[in-house]
Amino acid sequence: MAQPTALVTGGAGFIGANVARELLDRNYRVVVLDDLSGGVVENVPDGAEFRQGSIGDHVLVDELFAEFRFDYVFHLAAYAAEGLSHFIKRFNYHNNVIGSINLINAAVNTGTVRCFVFTSSIAVYGSNQPPMTEDLVPEPEDPYGIAKFSIEQELKVSHAMFGLPYIVFRPHNVYGEFQNIGDRYRNVIGIFMNQALRGEPFTIFGDGEQTRAFSYIGDVAPVIARSVETPAAYNETFNIGGDSVYSVNVLAADTAAAMGVPLSVNYLPARQEVHSAYASHDKARKVFDLVDPPVPLADGLARMAAWAKQHGPQEPSVFEAVEVRRNLPPSWLAVLKN
Image (cartoon, rainbow, N blue to C red; front, side, top):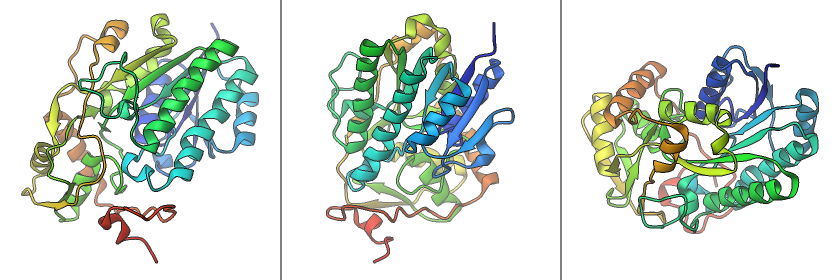
């Protein structure tokens, strides 16, 4: 059998890079497409062919599909900042919807793609009753979740119209080594660890009693990578990630302990967000035969903390192209240039 060729979008980000690494280990030829807006080229694993560019560039996307005739697409490129997405609607929909459509169009037109794997988000559920299951009717409450759900729907109609097979994953709060800890708008564990390295208090919006489950990268990337080898997964949707639920306050204390710093918290005004968001993974366990329990939070935090200490503190990024400043959290507004 010929070596299959896989496109990994967002493959310079830490989740995409781990998926690319898993695919290489499984003897795929891997092409990584990333614009380096959130990842770094050093994350791209040896053996993968790297192309710098945006999924928003339909000409580039079409050229890549024509050149490589991909067998599989693993679409992980996105700007995954739920809270900020209210204030960057145009950017959010261009990156997370139009870019995805460019890939779907190319997959349909090329006709070689055996499966299109899409990483969505549990943000599509909104405030549905947790633990969230795949049979719930999605009710996203922010533009990021709306964008993700729209692509889930597009994949369904593209399968019905053109026969394009797909698999949708809904991960949540993924963390681990090589994450961009300098992003001030997303990935709370990375934010906390960077603040610890900078000698700053942890910032928490609201009272910190919001609840989440946190997903170690090693429990997510391998399942995504090998999913296309599981026929029962085709044209299905799966929650994937950690099972144990924690408040943000408990997470802050555990992260401080992992980083070896005293806990210090600066509570900021609450922002509009889902209070409790965690999911059931029974469907994924059954279809992918997942028998090992997820990595415990303490173990995952210890692994990421060891890496973060070696990586060093990062200057927090500032998203300058904010489109709506009304109701923007004051801490985010304060860092914008006038």
